[in-house]
Length: 152
Figure 1 (cartoon, one colour):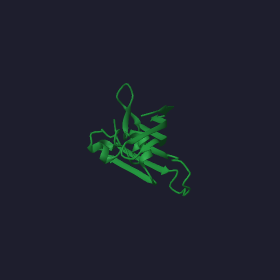
Figure 2: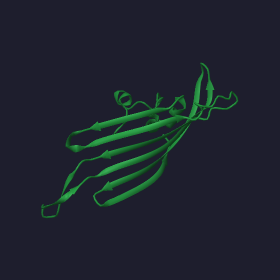
Figure 3: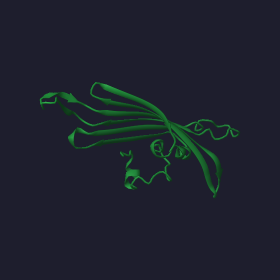
Figure 4: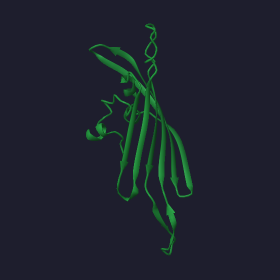
């Protein structure tokens, strides 16, 4: 599994319980409730053989510009885009002759929302979140699209 964000990678992926930034889109959408402003998350990984991974996420706290004291916590809305490019792979026929190349890729768009249900000073919080992923898998001329909600 490829994980965005150096902090989470440095923690060995054990980030779900402490997710408190725009990378919460990937790890735990309930953690979006801890964001009190707009955040952008960026990752770019380049590996050998032309394999690349890019992630961009935007989290926007819906209450950050509302000054009314009687307005409840509106939560944080987020969107992200991830691209996993596996590089060019030589395509061969059954005789072993080169017939071209393919560039397999996975692309994922995620919409997420997180909100604190209960905030108690000194006692902790109860937060909830959800996300929905739309996935494109490109392999040569074949395309596969899937859409499924995922709660983490």
